[in-house]
Amino acid sequence: MHTTTVHTAALASAIIITSISQVFLKSGATGKTSFIKSFLNWKTIVGYCLLAIVTILNVYAMQRIELKTITAWIGTTYILVVLFSLLFLKEKIDLFKIAGCSLIVFGVLIFTR
Image 1: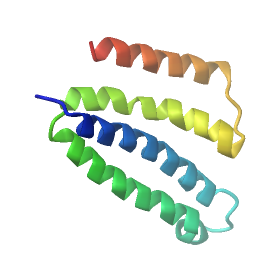
Image 2: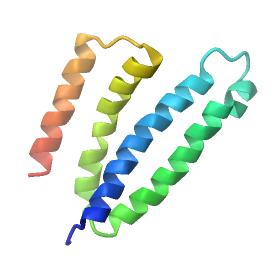
Image 3: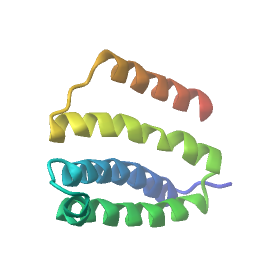
């Protein structure tokens, strides 16, 4: 398949937006007294709306990018979630998370060659 820049940008955007949506979902779920309040929180709703956008971007990216390539690159979402959780949720990054992120980077580099 011939990959275009626009399709690659759609995939990159989907990866970034997925990570941001996870932070919104965690933020919306934290500290609420009930499941319903967590589910109806504005941050949770924003998180789910972002995931809807991600679905559209992924379908667009799949028009030109091989599924194996998309699957490999989506793994980088985990790295961004760790970074965003550190920056926005003030969560700690331990040695295991660093090791896991390193393995993901190594896997993506090997798999996409």
